[in-house]
Length: 462
Image 1: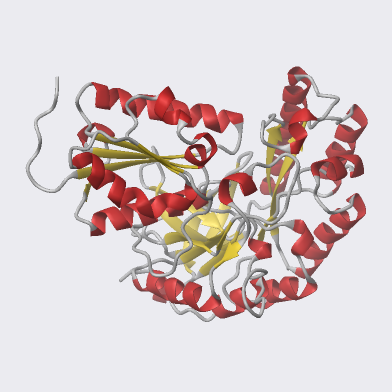
Image 2: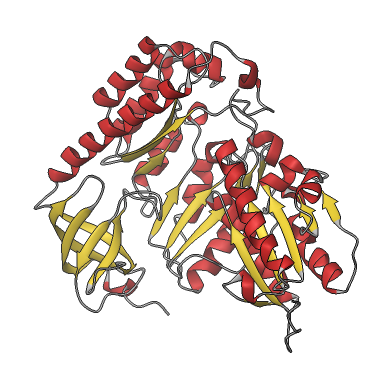
């Protein structure tokens, strides 16, 4: 049964999957559509147009994206939708084949065609039955001055400083989906940071496929250190966090800038992927085991009280029990505050797809579980030692399911991906910095009570 056309502007719903880089792309597409007269709704079942912005980094992400497309397509088949547009990494990876796989999809737009979403939506709503597939070139939203509608809480925002990657790790499909490194200028990023601060953003999260590669493609080659120094002067911002740094491009200048900045938090997100020499070579990481160990130690020495987040891959082709035990020992010897472990997944468009010998899936799963169990123990021990300390935290909002308590984070935890702090206190607001005393700890979270405001000037958002 076809739903009757509602009066007023066309209604729009977004389904965004994947990483924060994809979130920013959705925010720019959403901003462009709203500027063109669309009205946003939360539920695709209440919309005229639905956009599914997909992820395809791993085969598990491909399956999740296809499930999301199928669920939204079912709404169109029942008459709840007029138009379904698929964007993002799966669109770039699969292209027009998605039109064959999902007859309900009206348009497929690759990562470099995100600005075409307005034309595609109007095309379908105008009554055209011509289906669109455009994946001409990879990319993402790094254009200056484009409209943007934030989807994060008011006090926190992502600032995409670059798109694409010039590295060619043998397991990674990102360059194929997003292209080579493309950086925004320091001036444009500072201008956006000021605009975000003016609307109440207190924490900036700098993102890109390779943030330490920032500026290598720009005239004069300004580096990440230059950008951080410029952003450190933006009034109204409390915390600046950098995510997705690549090991090979870290410098002593960057470490010094990080340590001496007023607003750049002592938090380093650096996917290492492995530590065993043979694995680093086969992964194409362009760093030896010795260089990797020395870099991590140098960062920990150079940035006081730094919290370190990293990723590792287990079960990569050729990984022996000895390689795995080397990694296991390293995590014990050089503990990380936040650790993600992936079991290797074969990606057809990557060099590692044909590599042998392959590690059986049961071994991949058991190795992953073992490292996660190790990290849980180490994290619990580390956090329990903090009971009785005071710490500065940023309030994110009411703690779900905990009346009278608040969700918060120390500077050592990133929004939505790391453990947090459950705070007891009254009259708190998102974005507020407060001093708390830690009263308890779990495997990944802390519990605390408010002692005082860390910065009264930042308690109330304008």
